[in-house]
Image (cartoon, rainbow, N blue to C red):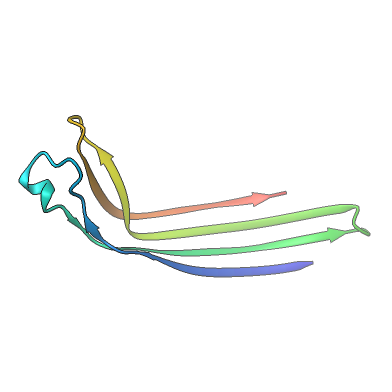
Length: 92
C-alpha cells in the first residue's frame, strides 16, 4: 500500500501579443504572467498476494492569469488571461 501527495508550482512570463495586429490597441497588447499550483493525492495498493490492484487519485490545478490565445474573425489573435480551476479523480 502506498499513499502519496504532491504539490507543484509553475510560472509563465507575460509578454506582448502583437502578431498580425489590426489596431493600435493590439500592438500594445501587453498581458501579465501566469502561475499554476497543482495538487495531487492518491492511494496505490496491491492486495491478496497481488491478485487485486486498487488505485485511486484526485487532483486540483489552480491557475492565476491563465494565458489563452483567441483567434479573431479578421485573422488576428489576442491573449486573454483569467483565473481557472481544473479538478478530477480517477479510480482503477
